[in-house]
Image (cartoon, rainbow, N blue to C red; front, side, top):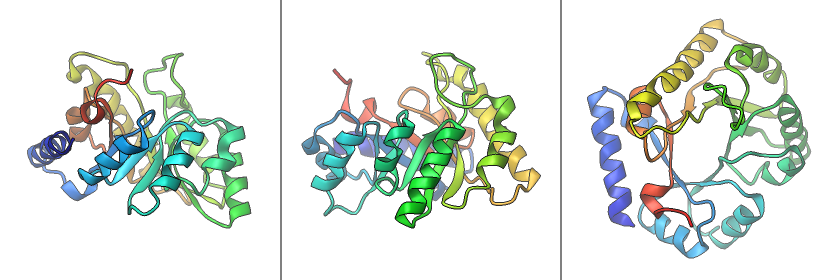
Length: 227
């Protein structure tokens, strides 16, 4: 597994140099959902510093079993409002906030726990009905409303483009998310400074980095195909 993680890190480095980006601003999220605690431990030992989970109960088992390790846990799956109370405080960053109902619930639970929960807003750039996320056209109004809540901190945006065999075809979707981030930041909305872009997976992360990704979510290239 170390060879796989090292190979990805080398590709990240080469891509960052190629597009003249600061390597320190690009973070690898090892997508560990459905993987055993032992496999996740192997990934950590091999250099994975951020783990991406999608299922609350599974994540709680892993974070508890691996609490001796100095790693960061991110939630990258679809989060139901009724599970928000379990996600808040368990994860350093929730990538997939896709509704105002969820924003309100995360804020409510964070207030109860007396913490500020870091989140990303998921944007459905491709307008696919099978994908979660707010529509691009609604993003600015959504962010303005979300920024009013005191116990969340909106760090940036997340998206999942359609799957393509040719990663160049994903570029317009990544570019659109970066442009949205830049547009929102120019508006200087109170309590909103977007710094993070979570985009790019095993099949398209190099192009995502070229377009400004700060978090790339890699599962298959680290753990192999999920069964």
